[in-house]
Image 1: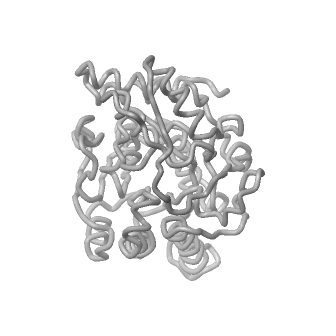
Image 2: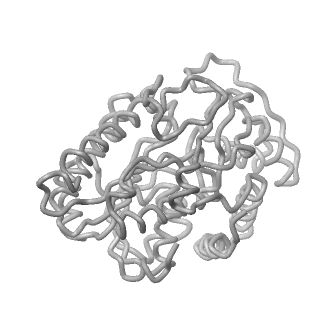
Amino acid sequence: MDKAFWKHKKVLVTGHTGFKGSWLCLWLQHLGACVTGLALEPSDTPALFEVADVAQGMDSIIGDIRNPETVKKVFQQSRPDIVFHLAAQPLVRYAYQHPVETYETNVMGSLHVLEAVRATDSVQAVVMITTDKCYENREWYWPYRENEALGGYDPYSSSKACAELLIASYRQSFFSTQTDSEYPVAIASARAGNVIGGGDRAVDRLIPDIIHALQHKQTLLIRNPDAVRPWQHVLEALAGYLQLAEKLYQEGANYAEAWNFGPYEQDAKSVAWIVKRMTETWGDKLDWQVESDEQPHEACSLKLDCSKAHEKLQWQPKWNLQQALEKITQWHRAELNGDDLRQCCLQQIKTYMNTPNQ
C-alpha cells in the first residue's frame, strides 16, 4: 500500500475494538491516517485493543451499529473519506445460541452503515468485510470464486450471505454511476479466510484455545481435527483491504465488487495440522482430544480462489502459514515477557510491509 496515499485521509473503522479492527487501526495510524472508530466495548479479556493501547492514536467511540441514529451521528461528525466496516457478530457457535442478535448485527448493522454512507457526502470508498463462509458450501475440493452461489447452513454464515446480497443491492440501487446519485460511492465486499495473529482472545477460535492450553498446561479440546480452512495471518487480509480501498478511492466502479482474500492453496490446512505445528513452534508439549459432546454443523472443507485479487490488485500473501505461526508465537512471548505490545504490533506491521512478495 501507498503510505503517501493514506497520510491525513479521514478513515472510519467500525468494529475497531475487535481483534481484526485493532490491527487495522494500528496499521492506519502507522500510515498517518486520521482514524475514527465505532464499536462496542471490547468483549475479550485482556483485549488486544487495550493491551496494545490502540485508542492512543485515534478517536474511539463506543456505540452499537444496531442503532441507526448512533451510526449516522458518527458518520456526520467524522465525515470520513474511506470506511472499513468490520463490526460483526463473528462466531459460528455463538450464532447458534443467539441467532437474532447475529442477524441484527450482521445484516441490520450493515444496513445502517450503508444508510449512513448515503447520508454522508464525504465518503468516497467503502470496504464491507464479510467472510469466506458466505458461500453455499458444497464440501467440494475446488476453491470458491467470487461469482459462486451464496448461502449458509448455519445462522452466522447465512447472516453474512444476507449482508453480501444487501451490499450488492445498495451498490446497484444507490451508489452506481448508472443511478441518479449525486455522488457515486465505490463500495466493495471483502471475503477473507480464517485470520490468525497475536492478541486474538475470541472464544471458540483454534489459535487462542491452543495458546491458552499451552500457557496453562491444559488438555486442548477440539471439535473437528479434519476440518480444512484457509488460514492466514491477519495482516495478509488487512493488506488486501487497504489495497482495495486505495483502488476504490482512485478508480471507483472498476473495483466496486466482491473480493476474496485468502492464502495460497498449500496453506489451507486441517485443524490437526495447525495444532501440531503451533505446538512445535511454541516449543512445548500439548495433549489434545476431540470433544465428545455433539457439535452443531460446521463446514468441513473450505478454500478460496483469490486469483482476481492477485491479478487486479497485485495483492498476494507474503507470509506462509509457518511464518504466521512464528509471528503469533513471537507476539505471545512478548506478552509473557511484559514487553510493549503496541510496539510489538507496529514492528510486525513494519516487518510485513518490508517483506517482498513470495
